[in-house]
Length: 189
Picture 1 (tube, one colour):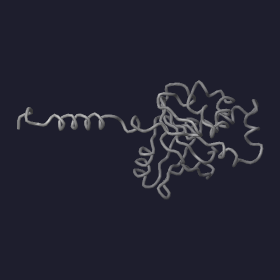
Picture 2 (cartoon, rainbow, N blue to C red):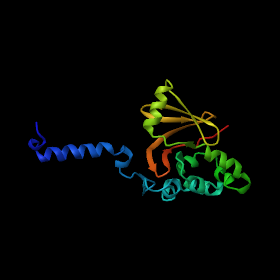
Picture 3 (cartoon, helix red, strand yellow):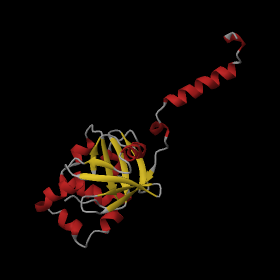
Picture 4 (cartoon, rainbow, N blue to C red):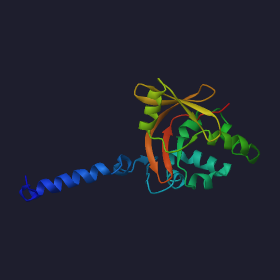
């Protein structure tokens, strides 16, 4: 069959399909809303997080810990980002105590325990869980370990103290990584 005999509409359709399949899935994803604000994949982790009404405590903690420059850096990073509700589950006074200058080292350790080097989508995490026969061990920037598992189709993270968090809003892509919103604060040993 000669190309001249192929209808133009068929050629254009085939070209469109090829172009769409060449675009990464995260680039086609609509900018998700987190805390009432659109999260733009062209902005970095901090630029997006400051707009989320659900992450004001996390942003305050990142500022108090002096981690803004790091999380605005090239990364890439995967940040397991606890919501304000997650911080509210901690014992009364914990957040206020951690935000004090004399507790900066502890705050840094807790926050960097929520960060893994690289860009891990939930698909990547599921592959690692499957390869690990039901669990994936994730080394955090703080040097600690998180254990990722699946339960009822959701990705669960278990910290070194046995605390658990669920990814509630997955794959919030950033220019320098990805945010996985979680419903609990993870604590290192």
